[in-house]
Length: 345
Image 1 (cartoon, rainbow, N blue to C red):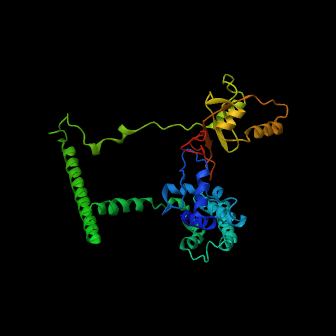
Image 2 (image 1 turned 30 degrees about the vertical axis):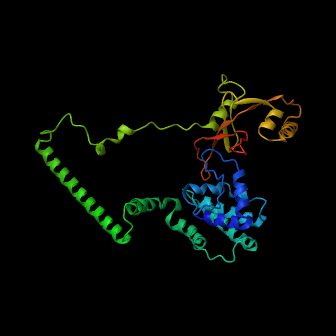
Image 3 (image 1 turned 30 degrees about the horizontal axis):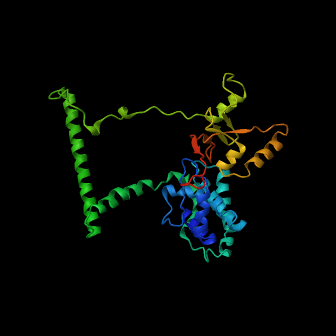
């Protein structure tokens, strides 16, 4: 992926210390990787570290030019759109448009002094993604996970067991032995089942069979490990049914509600009840009272603000998938006041 280049550009543009500080300020939701110590010390941004894509725009905003930010945002859009499981003519056009937008703004990265040329093989290969989708289908179907894991199992792990001498010859000999063992196991397996089939045809399949013999671990049926499928709650449909009054016995106020993009589910009882001033002090939000007052003035001018606030330290959030608006599993968000070990809560 391209995130390692994004991080290098951001570090060069605003500085490693500043980028790390910005990332440490971002509240990390449950299920996403946190970068409390920043990303400038990461040697390679792969695997789970791709979660930095969720924060990089927020971490850079205000520290670079608008054109620089648009270039990074367009590249992120391209990477997101190119990972769609299905494509239409319109979606392919959006992929090409996002890449073209990046090229339109990439000169701003050079003007910032981050790069002096664009001789990057990964960037050049991005030009082939749209034609590849036309010819071979979605890119997401071609995964390198199998070969990556095979490299770990067949090369890295045996190398750790070696004496670090004659590395290439030892690995080759090890792979040769594995292949011979596999061929031997395959041959004995076929021969065993051939004899078993003959015995079944002649009616001798039960002769000499130990009825009390425990099955081998490798032959245990997968049905013994089956588990029921967990049903995903639909916050959107439940909140809609509550609003339409289909569940008149549900306690009010409703603790499940949804917008067009996000569903929320709160516990029946709040974690705590504090006055506005107490909450502002506990969460270090000096403008909390003014913000609440301004909100109710704009939304409901006749509403009188209560003395105490009900505060939930945990909330379940559900969203739809980026590409096809498919319902995703709910995520849990935690909010705690600033502590000595975590000054930002």
